[in-house]
Image (cartoon, rainbow, N blue to C red; front, side, top):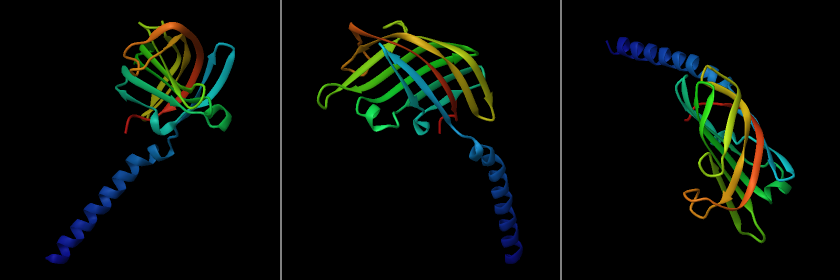
Length: 176
């Protein structure tokens, strides 16, 4: 009887392992990738996707997208630490966009720049979108104005605005 129960347990464990391998196999082959091309004043930067910090959540018709980029070369890293672009995606329309940019000022101080639709007129237009097997591919353009903030974007000072524009092309996995 003990051998029979051990066999049933082993059989159940093998069935579970096989099921998990079929579920996770597509995810193992899935690859997050992409970049944001950012133009600030007269300077254009191409910033690669930080895959571990970018994702989406929601359902097919309504998604929340969060894209984080970080420079991959030391020269750019010494000036710009990160750029985050986030927005709601209702079918093919981006809504409630937000952007934050962390860059180094003179010395070792950091400047925190923020923009939203209601503060800086940030606009995101999605040009392509597809969702297959939990992989979201989305691309588009953005433009607006960023202002500095000392409270992580709660209040944005637009007295010395920084115009921003660019494009994004990313492939994201859902939030984990």
